[in-house]
Structure formats: C-alpha cells, structure tokens
Image (cartoon, rainbow, N blue to C red; front, side, top):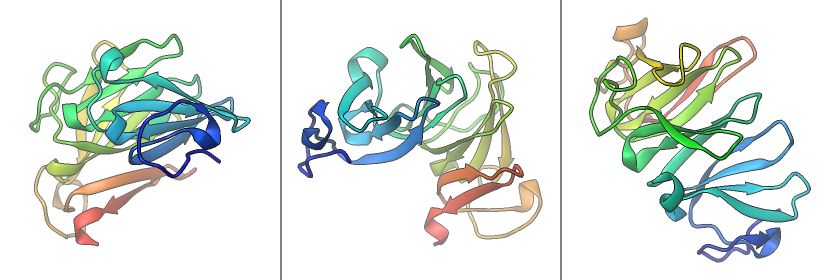
Length: 198
C-alpha cells in the first residue's frame, strides 16, 4: 500500500514513496497510518485513502534521531520513542513537537527533568493517557504518566528495574533482556517483546 521497495526518502504518491527502515506503525482517529521511519529520522503519514505519503516531523524540525516506535491517542497526538536521543516526544495536532520525558542516556525515574531512558524502543498507550515504554538498554518497562501535566509528566519503572535477566515475578523480581516492543489489550494487560530472551 506504500513504498517503492527502494531504500531512500521520497514523499508523494504512495507506491512511489521511499522509506529507510520503517519500524513502527499506529493508526489515528481518521484512519491515517503514522510511520516511524527510523533511518530517515522522520515521522511519516500515509493518508487513509492510501494515496499520499507525507512527512510530519524530521531531524530538522523535531531533532529526531532514529525514532523506533510511536503511539497515537484519541485526539491524534503522536508519541514518539526518539531512540537515538533517549527521549519521549509528543507531536501534537498543531504540528508542535515537545519532549515530555528524558534528556540523555541513563536510568532514572521522576519528573521530566530527572527521568532518563536508554534507547526507548517500544510504546503502548492506555485509555487513561498512561504511556508504557519498553526501555531497551535499561531492561525495563517504564510508565510515563501524561495525565499529570504535559510539562512535567511523572516517570515510573513498572517492571525490570534496570537489571537484565529472565525471571518471572512481581514488579522488581521480574527480569527481561532488552525489551523491544509492547502493546496493551482491552483488559489492560501489557504484552512485551522480550527481545534478547527470545
């Protein structure tokens, strides 16, 4: 439905468009497909009629670096795992991009200024506006509570606690190794692709 099959960058007619390692998709309320085009450092959109590909944000306008995952809320705000910058960003319906959590590579919970991620690589958004992040190199699942305030969302670790392994258990006892993707079901369960534990 989109892409010429040739590596590169080109907006325009869907089947002529070019991508470079598109890695994640989400569908907004209008039925448009939002694409994390990782190695082009762009967020792209295929319109709901599958006719046109356009760029919504890029390395120049939004300082993106290797965006690996996206999630879209009910008002079409787009959350971005800006993997190479170790940040979580939001692209709003007015095309403004802001960092909502993270700063530099590391590990730390807290508000926007204290929270640290290390290659966030998967996102899942629940119906209350809480964003779950597969924090790849921290071997953890983090929660960004965007409902508190977009200017200072709170970040908490909900599984893994920055220690790799392969054990089951409640909260801090559970271990994973480089979680890469995640999604939620209608009952609120969170599923995790535990990448290096196969």
